[in-house]
Length: 280
Image: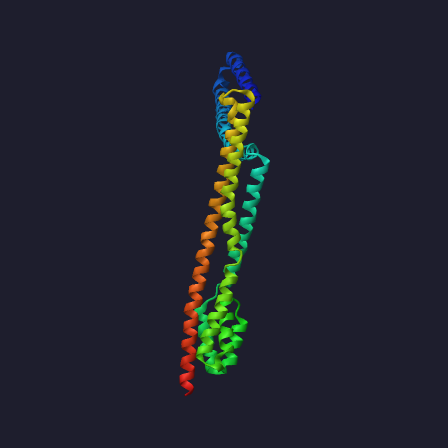
């Protein structure tokens, strides 16, 4: 672009020289040529302004790309500086913990049931088709709540006491399924910072070994071991915090499902009691 501007500038000077010569030979054409030259000058100025604007914008984009690239590069460098041994184990802990968290979240979301609609359908089925119709509604509905209701309806001919006992017993089974693998998630939450602290201790031991070998306590000598110690601790704490957030969400989701199952079970027993009283 700068070469183009130079050529245009030279071309403009040549036009001015030509205007001067032609003005001496033919004064009547001065006005027409002057207008043409002014148009060329405006074009050159516009091109120059465009080039300057592009030059001002381009460095900004380049700086933003450099900042983004430098962030990933710094993260990678710090991970490598922390040591492949402990940093790799901490990364594996994060991957396994997240995998279990995602599995639990998917399972709990699939286990969520619209209990109000289910109870309404069971009530209608009991009035139209009896116990078998209500059991069919439970078979067609996925989720632990429908399974608990099905077990209760299976014991309904034996009385409401057996229905209640069956619901409580099978509810404990379903609660165990909801809480499956949560103990492993809590293990990874506790394991990540402990691995970081272990890396800290080993880094400090390396720093003291360097001091002992060189009989010198210069900052440059011990900086490497201390940096490794701090990096492993930081990454271990970050992993623990990430997994803790998912773990708390999972526990809250399980508590919500358990409360929903208990409320719906009480409502089912009330429906069965009302149907039994209506038959009498």
